[in-house]
Image (cartoon, rainbow, N blue to C red):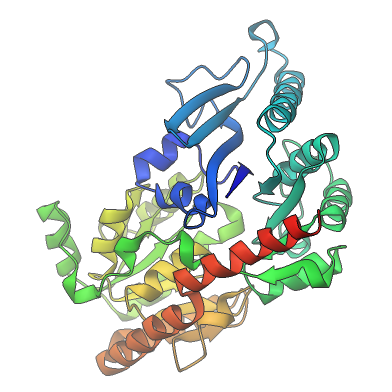
Length: 412
C-alpha cells in the first residue's frame, strides 16, 4: 500500500462536485493500490469558476474522506497585490509548490502524479527534486501541434512563449520516472520530447469514465427534464461534448450543422460543455436564423449526459478526449477528424467516419450520409461501443496504471 500526491488542473473541486465527476477522484486510488491520496489543484479557486470561494490566500486543505485530502491552490497569494495579478499569481504558485514540498516530506509520500508536462508537471518536478519522490507524468495532448495550429502558447497566462513551453516540457518529460500516455500519438510526442521509451506506457481513459456511461443504451433512464426529452424527440440531433474553446474546435461543429441545415431541415445541433466560444456560437445561430435548432446545455452532470446521449442521432468530434469514449459507450455513430488519438477508436466505415483534419465539408458529407441511413447508424453505433470496451476496458487500464507506479517504485 502506498501514498500518492496527484497534481492536476483539469477540474476544480467545485466543478467535480457540480458535474458529478467523482470518478476522476475515486480512480486515483487504483483499486486500493494507494491507501492515501492527496489531490492538488494549483489554481482551484479561480474567481471566474469559483466566485463563492476566496481566490486569494494560502493553499487550503479540504478533507474529502479519511484517506483523501484536496489541496486547493489560490489564484493569488496576497489581497494587497490583487491589482498586480501576474505577480500575485506567481507568488500563489510559489506558495502552492512550497506547501506540497512540506506535505511530501511530512507524510513521506513516495510518488507524485502530474496531469500534464507543463504547469502541473513543472510543479511536480520541483517537488520531486526537493523531496526525492518519484514523478509520473500524464500526457493527453500533442502540445507542439496544438501550439502550431493556434499560433499561441498552450498556457499564455503562465508561459509567454511556445519556446519556453517546449523547454519546460522537455525538462519535465526527460526527468520523469514514468509516462502515462493516453494514446500512441501522445506517447510519440512524449518520446520525441525527451521521455524514455521504456518508461512510456499507453494507458487510455477507460478507468476515468463514469460507470453510468457503461450501461447499455436501452437500459438507461430518460432525462428527468421532460421538456428536454420532448425537444430531443422532436428532430434528429447531432451532439458535441467538450469545452467550447478554440483548441477543441467546436465552431467546426456549428459549420457542419450550418451546411446540413439547408439539406436536412429538421436536424439540430446539441452542445454539452462550456467555454468562451458559447456566446460566439449563439450569436452565429441567431444571425443565421437557426437559434431554434441549436441547443447549448453548458456543463451538466454525468447522469444527465449519459441519459441525453442515447437520445441523439450522431456525434461530432473535431477533437475530444474522454467525451469521445462517452459517446462511443452510448453506441452513437461518430464523425470525427483524423486527429490525435481519434483514429484509434474510430475506424473509417467500421466504427464511424474519419474526415481529414479541418475538412468541414467532408465531415458534413459523412454526417449527411448518417442522417439519411438508419441501418448504418445502428451498425456503426454497435461497432463503436464494442470497440470502446475492447480498447478502453476500465479494469485493464487500472492494472496497466498500477504497473507504471510499481515499476517506478521498484527503481528506488
